[in-house]
Length: 162
Ligand SMILES: CC(C)(COP(=O)(O)OP(=O)(O)OC[C@H]1O[C@@H](n2cnc3c(N)ncnc32)[C@H](O)[C@@H]1OP(=O)(O)O)[C@@H](O)C(=O)NCCC(=O)NCCS
Image (tube, rainbow, N blue to C red; front, side, top):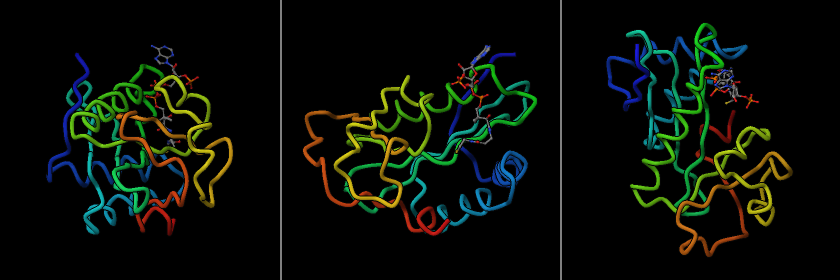
């Protein structure tokens, strides 16, 4: 069956919580998503439907600073569905929606696999963050509006508290 990525619906929320609780060692990421929604910081929340089931989920939340930027986290795919490009499809769809919504750029904290989407640690190097270093990366969506290259990079409160 074909993979389908769509925005989350209210009826998906329990499945999304369970998916993250199973994908990560603790319930912290699952609870984090509930809190980001509650705080009004969840901006783009997408599910991947495969074989009629929710196979994966990604969330993009509003950064406290710099203005106009989103943070990508968390992303998870159910173990049985991994290594088929589902996370890749979720992230690409999220980035396309972020660009269409006119966000300036997206931060992520992660490894080299994010570089294929265009995330660049060099572009994040000027930002001040507890996560500063090679794992903090930025993807510019609107290069012409990315005039902020320094200052604090602060994730939404729920993410920062994690
Ligand atoms: C990390 C995670 C989301 C990846 O999900 P996924 O759907 O397996 O990801 P993808 O299939 O898009 O890509 C995974 C790898 O499989 C490769 N891949 C993609 N399609 C493939 C295919 N058809 N055949 C073989 N490999 C493939 C990708 O190139 C990628 O390689 P990389 O790890 O070297 O970058 C998933 O493993 C997970 O939920 N882990 C637990 C939670 C977690 O750690 N989340 C990330 C931090 S927030």
